[in-house]
Image (cartoon, rainbow, N blue to C red; front, side):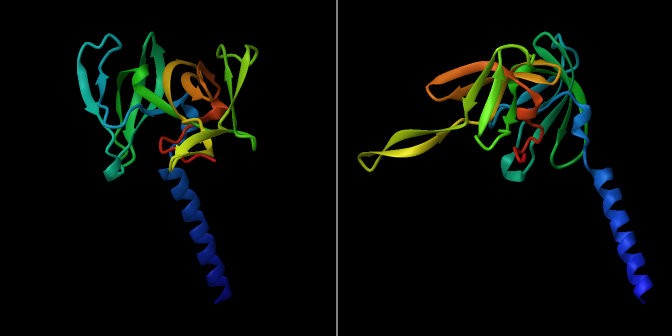
Length: 194
């Protein structure tokens, strides 16, 4: 009886391993995984980077849990070739979209909750440190109260170079337009990164 139990446990472990590899997308093979920039925004998918004709249009449906992701395959000027997918089914559509209609979730990598942004998509370029949290004062019930403010970590993508994305980050009293390296990008379109 004990031997049968061990075989059953072994079989369950093998099934779990096989199902994980069969149903999970390996995002590391793509340079970048992006999502739709604005809520209620429709993104047109074109057949060429010249926007000759529209293949389809996609729009997130947050209430139904249907979010669209874009696996970036290549870039040409202000357009990117992508594989479009969603969180409901695995149907893939290949086409071209405008870079500026996309976004990426950021993630901090230290206990100090900072982002490292660069002037160029190169670690040797000038680096800017942006704190993701700071103290600020807000009017609450007629009085100013000290509260914690934070960076909106849903960044509009302005350009792509390899695994780097050029983003617009609103920090404390300043807007930064800089390059974000891969380690500060969340490749999960739901923003659930650790």
